[in-house]
Amino acid sequence: MHKGQNLKTAQSPDWPRIAPVGLDGLLVRFADALTEPANRAALAFRAAVVGEGWSGVEETSSALASVYLRFDPLHLRHADLTARLASLLGARDWYDAPPPQGRRFWRIPTLYGTDAAPQLAEAAGLAGVDVKQAIADLSGARTRVLTLGFAPGQPYLGELPPAWDIPRQAAITPQVPVGALVVAVRQFVLFANASPTGWRHVGQTAFRCFLPEDADPFALRAGDEVQFYAVSAAEYANIQRDTTSNGGAEAVAIT
Image 1 (cartoon, rainbow, N blue to C red):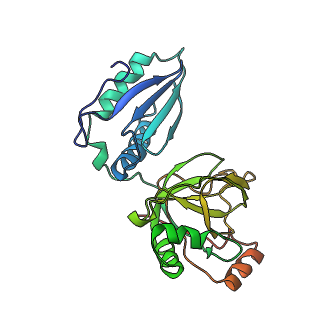
Image 2: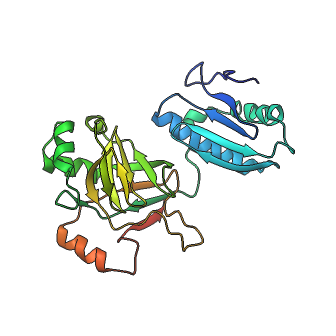
């Protein structure tokens, strides 16, 4: 297979595609934009590649709608690895594949609005709902970790209901704190460290996505599911004082 060659699937005659990335990388793309089936395909296909255990493949990662492989070009040729990927892609309809094993469902307590998350009302207005309904929408949503990126262990989660297809800001917020929950384009981002952002800050958690002192430093994995349930300011203050858990979060295995 050559750059840009298409593989016919049940999803579209144009996808997925395999393309080289430099001397030691290949990218398998399932769409040119995020869709639920494309993200599901990326998660399932990456898990399948890892399961193959191909010698010479040194790293894999999934994005919103693609899978990246880094390999040793002294051990594998682009053409050989591309052929293996094409064969694996043809083995099933990846857009309808079940999610990978080992996923978890997280419930993370979140303070919506107040001075801790000052852009909730603005975001609610853009979504066409009042603040009370915004909290109900956002805290009731069970979202998937679509990918990790931008900062170590930082998740992009979605998709939210269609009303939350709100734009990013025209200006940049100079900084949101660790644990900030921001929203735009039907997605949440949970900030792993203090950072500027163009997304609206609607909730605040005491959860740490990045735990550099741990053997497994990324708390969340692509494919995990998360609910950011609402707590009061008093409850949030108690959670902040509790050093025995990661921001009061609880996780159970998805079976």
